[in-house]
Length: 177
Image (cartoon, rainbow, N blue to C red; front, side):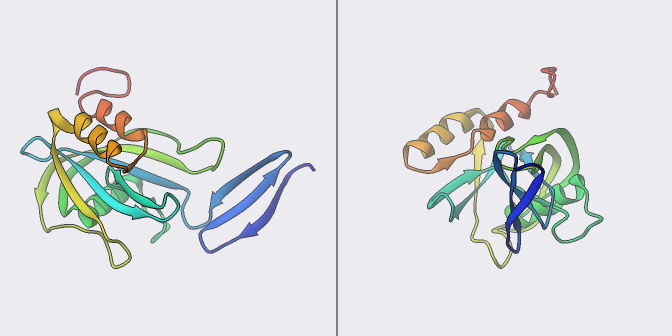
Protein backbone atom coordinates (compact mmCIF):
# COMPACT_ATOMS: atom_id res chain seq x y z
CA UNK A 1 0.00 0.00 0.00
CA UNK A 2 1.34 3.44 -0.87
CA UNK A 3 -0.10 6.87 -0.17
CA UNK A 4 -2.81 7.84 2.25
CA UNK A 5 -6.09 5.92 2.27
CA UNK A 6 -9.13 6.86 4.34
CA UNK A 7 -10.61 3.74 5.92
CA UNK A 8 -13.43 5.48 7.83
CA UNK A 9 -14.71 8.99 8.33
CA UNK A 10 -16.99 9.94 11.19
CA UNK A 11 -18.46 13.27 12.21
CA UNK A 12 -15.26 14.50 13.90
CA UNK A 13 -12.49 12.02 12.98
CA UNK A 14 -11.04 10.46 9.87
CA UNK A 15 -9.12 7.17 10.20
CA UNK A 16 -6.30 6.78 7.71
CA UNK A 17 -3.69 4.26 6.65
CA UNK A 18 -0.48 5.39 5.00
CA UNK A 19 2.08 2.78 4.07
CA UNK A 20 2.09 0.64 7.25
CA UNK A 21 0.79 3.36 9.63
CA UNK A 22 -2.76 3.82 10.96
CA UNK A 23 -3.66 7.24 12.39
CA UNK A 24 -6.51 9.67 13.01
CA UNK A 25 -7.14 13.15 11.70
CA UNK A 26 -9.62 15.65 13.12
CA UNK A 27 -12.17 16.80 10.56
CA UNK A 28 -13.65 19.63 12.66
CA UNK A 29 -10.44 21.32 13.90
CA UNK A 30 -6.74 20.90 13.35
CA UNK A 31 -5.44 22.16 16.65
CA UNK A 32 -6.23 22.64 20.31
CA UNK A 33 -5.10 24.75 23.26
CA UNK A 34 -4.13 23.90 26.84
CA UNK A 35 -4.50 26.92 29.10
CA UNK A 36 -2.13 27.46 32.02
CA UNK A 37 -4.05 29.81 34.29
CA UNK A 38 -3.18 31.17 37.74
CA UNK A 39 -5.75 33.19 39.68
CA UNK A 40 -4.85 36.40 41.54
CA UNK A 41 -4.89 34.25 44.73
CA UNK A 42 -2.00 32.13 43.28
CA UNK A 43 -4.21 29.13 42.54
CA UNK A 44 -3.98 27.02 39.41
CA UNK A 45 -7.13 26.18 37.52
CA UNK A 46 -7.85 22.54 36.73
CA UNK A 47 -10.99 20.93 35.33
CA UNK A 48 -12.42 17.53 36.11
CA UNK A 49 -14.69 15.62 33.77
CA UNK A 50 -15.64 12.10 32.77
CA UNK A 51 -13.92 11.07 29.53
CA UNK A 52 -15.62 8.21 27.72
CA UNK A 53 -12.45 6.85 26.00
CA UNK A 54 -10.73 6.56 29.40
CA UNK A 55 -13.81 5.25 31.23
CA UNK A 56 -13.10 7.47 34.24
CA UNK A 57 -12.82 11.03 35.45
CA UNK A 58 -9.80 13.01 34.35
CA UNK A 59 -8.08 16.05 35.74
CA UNK A 60 -6.92 18.46 33.04
CA UNK A 61 -5.91 22.03 32.55
CA UNK A 62 -8.66 23.95 30.76
CA UNK A 63 -8.45 23.14 27.06
CA UNK A 64 -10.37 23.17 23.83
CA UNK A 65 -10.38 22.95 20.08
CA UNK A 66 -9.40 25.79 17.74
CA UNK A 67 -11.56 26.36 14.69
CA UNK A 68 -14.33 23.90 15.49
CA UNK A 69 -16.92 26.69 15.73
CA UNK A 70 -15.48 29.31 13.38
CA UNK A 71 -12.87 28.97 10.63
CA UNK A 72 -11.37 32.35 11.57
CA UNK A 73 -10.68 31.19 15.16
CA UNK A 74 -7.17 31.70 16.55
CA UNK A 75 -5.21 30.04 19.33
CA UNK A 76 -5.62 33.17 21.45
CA UNK A 77 -9.38 33.51 20.90
CA UNK A 78 -9.93 29.81 21.58
CA UNK A 79 -7.87 29.98 24.78
CA UNK A 80 -9.85 32.93 26.15
CA UNK A 81 -13.18 31.36 25.14
CA UNK A 82 -12.43 27.92 26.59
CA UNK A 83 -11.00 29.31 29.84
CA UNK A 84 -14.14 31.37 30.44
CA UNK A 85 -16.52 28.59 29.36
CA UNK A 86 -14.89 25.84 31.40
CA UNK A 87 -13.75 27.70 34.53
CA UNK A 88 -15.69 30.97 34.66
CA UNK A 89 -12.44 32.97 34.67
CA UNK A 90 -11.75 35.64 32.04
CA UNK A 91 -8.18 36.42 30.97
CA UNK A 92 -6.99 39.92 30.08
CA UNK A 93 -4.18 38.41 28.01
CA UNK A 94 -3.00 35.08 26.67
CA UNK A 95 0.44 34.16 25.38
CA UNK A 96 1.13 31.19 23.12
CA UNK A 97 4.19 29.45 24.58
CA UNK A 98 4.71 26.51 22.24
CA UNK A 99 2.94 24.28 19.73
CA UNK A 100 3.49 20.57 19.15
CA UNK A 101 1.75 17.27 18.40
CA UNK A 102 -0.65 15.81 20.96
CA UNK A 103 0.37 12.26 20.08
CA UNK A 104 2.68 12.16 17.05
CA UNK A 105 2.18 8.43 16.43
CA UNK A 106 -1.63 8.54 16.64
CA UNK A 107 -2.87 11.84 15.22
CA UNK A 108 -1.90 14.89 13.20
CA UNK A 109 -3.54 17.16 15.80
CA UNK A 110 -1.37 19.98 17.15
CA UNK A 111 -1.74 21.51 20.60
CA UNK A 112 -0.57 24.85 21.94
CA UNK A 113 0.35 25.62 25.53
CA UNK A 114 -1.07 29.07 26.31
CA UNK A 115 -0.43 31.11 29.47
CA UNK A 116 -3.43 33.18 30.60
CA UNK A 117 -2.87 36.27 32.76
CA UNK A 118 -4.92 39.01 34.34
CA UNK A 119 -7.72 36.67 35.43
CA UNK A 120 -11.10 37.90 36.67
CA UNK A 121 -13.87 35.64 37.97
CA UNK A 122 -17.03 36.08 35.83
CA UNK A 123 -19.12 33.00 36.68
CA UNK A 124 -18.85 29.48 38.16
CA UNK A 125 -17.75 27.73 34.95
CA UNK A 126 -18.72 24.15 34.21
CA UNK A 127 -18.58 24.07 30.42
CA UNK A 128 -21.28 24.24 27.78
CA UNK A 129 -24.50 22.20 27.49
CA UNK A 130 -22.57 19.08 26.40
CA UNK A 131 -20.11 19.15 29.30
CA UNK A 132 -20.24 18.42 33.03
CA UNK A 133 -17.08 20.08 34.31
CA UNK A 134 -16.00 20.55 37.93
CA UNK A 135 -13.53 23.39 38.45
CA UNK A 136 -10.67 22.96 40.91
CA UNK A 137 -8.63 25.90 42.19
CA UNK A 138 -5.44 24.51 43.72
CA UNK A 139 -2.70 26.56 45.41
CA UNK A 140 0.21 26.67 42.93
CA UNK A 141 2.72 25.43 45.51
CA UNK A 142 0.56 22.33 46.16
CA UNK A 143 -0.44 21.52 42.56
CA UNK A 144 2.01 18.68 41.86
CA UNK A 145 1.16 16.93 45.14
CA UNK A 146 -2.58 17.44 44.53
CA UNK A 147 -2.31 15.95 41.03
CA UNK A 148 -0.33 12.98 42.37
CA UNK A 149 -3.00 12.40 45.04
CA UNK A 150 -5.76 12.52 42.42
CA UNK A 151 -3.85 9.99 40.32
CA UNK A 152 -3.63 7.69 43.38
CA UNK A 153 -7.42 8.07 43.74
CA UNK A 154 -7.88 6.66 40.22
CA UNK A 155 -8.16 9.78 38.10
CA UNK A 156 -6.58 9.63 34.66
CA UNK A 157 -3.78 12.15 34.26
CA UNK A 158 -2.30 13.42 31.02
CA UNK A 159 1.48 13.82 31.41
CA UNK A 160 1.11 17.23 29.73
CA UNK A 161 -0.14 18.46 33.12
CA UNK A 162 3.41 18.35 34.43
CA UNK A 163 4.67 20.22 31.37
CA UNK A 164 2.04 22.85 32.17
CA UNK A 165 3.31 23.09 35.75
CA UNK A 166 6.85 23.61 34.46
CA UNK A 167 5.64 26.32 32.05
CA UNK A 168 3.77 28.15 34.82
CA UNK A 169 6.85 30.08 35.89
CA UNK A 170 9.18 29.48 32.93
CA UNK A 171 9.26 30.12 29.24
CA UNK A 172 9.88 27.12 26.97
CA UNK A 173 13.62 27.96 26.89
CA UNK A 174 13.79 27.74 30.70
CA UNK A 175 14.06 31.45 31.40
CA UNK A 176 11.84 32.73 34.23
CA UNK A 177 8.58 34.50 33.43
